[in-house]
Image 1 (cartoon, rainbow, N blue to C red):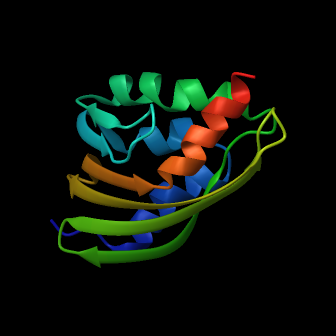
Image 2 (image 1 turned 180 degrees about the horizontal axis):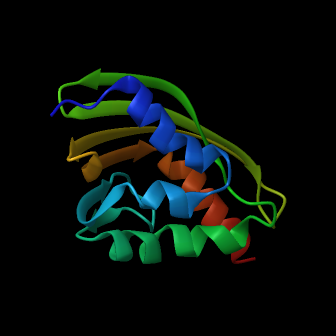
Length: 133
């Protein structure tokens, strides 16, 4: 069944309102999540738990006021959606983290089952380096 743009926007709205748990309710437990790039968080994750432990759990402590992802554009075709996101946050180190993302998502039964996530690798590396000082 095709996914609709309004459904995708509603799912992703949880990331901009500081409710990641609500977002992850719409992600399949066995999601295949590929984070592209050359930074330490890049890799292929075979479950929601593995993805969250390798990324969100490591990033969350670096942002005292939280890290929110805001939806800019959503393009839908059948069971797939391209979601353009951005973040404007300040890390504990003082680094301004203004990242841009594009997540290509595949849906099944209203849940995200596959993601290819593109982002600014250099900025993620800079964030990690600044937190280790």
